[in-house]
Length: 237
Image (cartoon, rainbow, N blue to C red; front, side):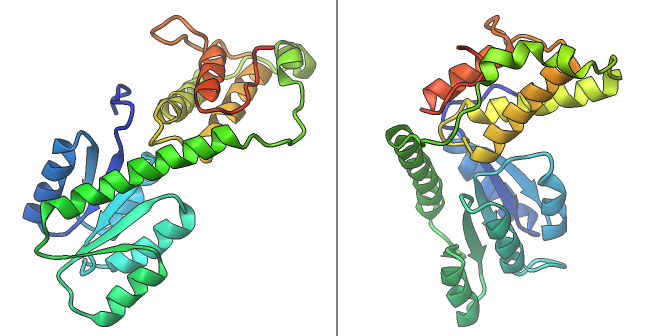
């Protein structure tokens, strides 16, 4: 998975059992400057979730196995900020009514390309609004002085050298979360928590983390990103 993305590039899930329709949707999304990840079924889409963080999902309804609307319901519960569109040829009024209940955009086939464009633009606009709200309304939560004691954590715990496979897993997870935090449109609180937890774990275990291409430590990079999103920093006093 590439780590270089445009600042507002989205990761869009495309689920349709028709190869031609999948290709069409992927092409439209790519032309808008975003990344599309296709799947031929809901089950195949579910296998992608541990690997990818999606901001938008375009789902066919009449899929083999699990129906698209059921997949949409699952995605909505697991990621409230995900923007979901049901792109379907069904004329069942109950399906369209259920999409409204789930806050899912209903797009009837055949569709105008502009309808796909509007879904993508809507997410980007909402993400920018959420970023502005975060910056304008900083919480008064108790802030433990992590920066003051972070470097003492390895000695405090005295953990022996960890296996390379654990270090590799920790580094890859950190890189993936930090990549999402670099983008206004892909920023989410889950990746913020994952990144902070991973960095603290690295401190506790005494893991030597790589630096960014710009020469920053991952701790410095995390704080830089938090400043850009109007969130509190943790490692630099």
